[in-house]
Amino acid sequence: MITLDIIMTFARQLMNFIEDVTNFFKNLLTDAHAFLNRFLSDDVILIFGILTAAFLATLIFRAVINKR
Image 1 (cartoon, rainbow, N blue to C red):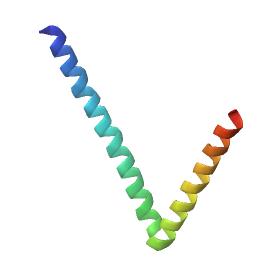
Image 2 (image 1 turned 180 degrees about the vertical axis):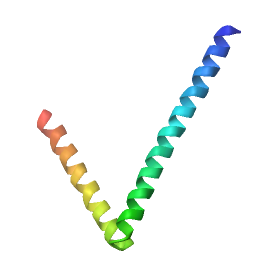
Image 3 (image 1 turned 60 degrees about the vertical axis):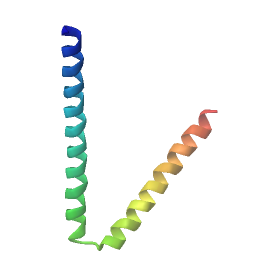
Image 4 (image 1 turned 120 degrees about the vertical axis):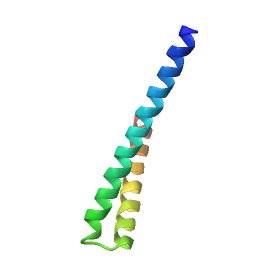
């Protein structure tokens, strides 16, 4: 019974931690979007996001290929 309580407490704490991290990143992205939206339209922000994702994917791909 004690072991079950320990496992349940750990599971609850882990879920709370994951929820806190999720909320942190949601708020961070929301604030960044609100700030950028003052200067740029949504289309431009989307294009920059796609370009940034493509650039990061290229860097990761090159790092993986160069390790071989």
